[in-house]
Image (cartoon, rainbow, N blue to C red; front, side, top):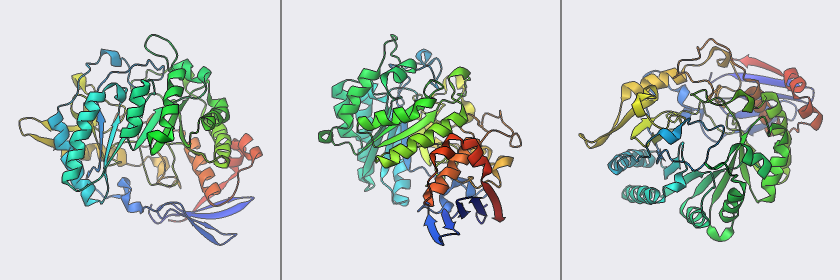
Length: 437
């Protein structure tokens, strides 16, 4: 796959694209365009059998199972029944040293994240303790600490100010104008949360609070998919510079109503329309399942060299498996802190087993130009769960067409309004041919 070359032709353009090199060559203008400054060798699926190893340089903490919202599309069903426990701080100290060694080895800062199927900012005391431990560990290894957090934004103004000043970056879940946001993101008592989120946004975007990076994560439903331009313009009115639009997906538990999941082609069409406006107005708009500017695969944490600790102390390979109570998610867990040994224990055999399952290409992906930039059906399709065989086809039109749009636009062409409107005809008519294997 690393030497393959594709030719992409349509009436307005003629391009050569070499995915592993991250390069586009415009046959008409004779211009060479780089789309990535990272080598393909960093892409985990390129590593041969037995040569792959997990060397995490990012530490992500799921602090608990507590949340103050009752989102209709939450990927952690019945979380209110889970015990609100925190992992042993000795486990954190041990895991932090593992991450710090790798961060120094790869010349990276110590990256710490607070995430998971909860609201992290409900656990301020635990966050402070964890940050103090990681700061101390980073200092011991001569590393700067960069801390990140996700939030639903339903927190007090005081907490929002503290978070803006404490974190390098924050990702905030916000689905757009009040009537769209409140449909699926109510409080536990059923009341809306849009006003709370708007207040938090005003705090996080205030220059005096000093937050370096704010990213909005907007969940797109069947109710909002045709209003993406309105949503993005609404974000622009609130001084948002970066947003990620994420269509609702069916979670591992199968608890999301199919009626909420948006039509894929409608999403693509309206995303491209919204992105055109965003670019003209200084906003970055992204779609996580296909990213041309970086090499990536499925959303597995081991592919991201991310050591993720659940509240009950396990290391998880999937962002959707935030606990292992009653061994419900045993197949995704690859170790934990062992008090008897006083050290972090990564189960190498389990890690390799998970890796081999997720790194085995699906048949339809083997000769795809988008192989290095696509989540390959994740998070809806999971090879670890064993519910999808490599030979079983799945619909990847949105990922392929989104990547084609990225390549075309990266090469300097504009996709016209008429082509967006009739995107099925436009993208189906593009000729994509493997010319060099």
